[in-house]
Length: 142
Image (cartoon, rainbow, N blue to C red):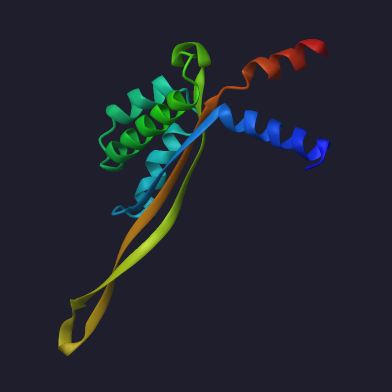
C-alpha cells in the first residue's frame, strides 16, 4: 500500500473512532410514527435527548431510548479512557427507513377483502463529539 493511501486510511480510522453507531432492524412500528420521535432528538446533546425520550408519551420513544443507550455503550467501548461528560456527545444523525411489510387481509363488505400493510422500520443512530469548538475558532479568526 502506498504512503498516501496509508495516511488516508489512518485518518479515516481516527475519524471513525470519535463516532459510534447503533442499528435497530425490523422494529414493528410504522416509519411515520418513528420519524416523529426521531425528529425531536436529531442534533441534541445526548443527556438532553435521553431526558426527552424518557418523558415522551410516544411508544416509539421507548425503543429509541434503548437504541441511544446502545450507541452510547458502543462509544464507550471505542473510547475507554475518555469520560462521556467531557466528550460533549451529540446525536449526529438518525435515519428512519422503511422495513419489511407484513401483508394481511381485512374482510370487506359483499365478499371482498382489503389488504392491510403492517409496516416496520429500520433505525440507524450515530453519536459523536460535537464540532462546536472548531466552528467558534473559525468565527473568531474572521
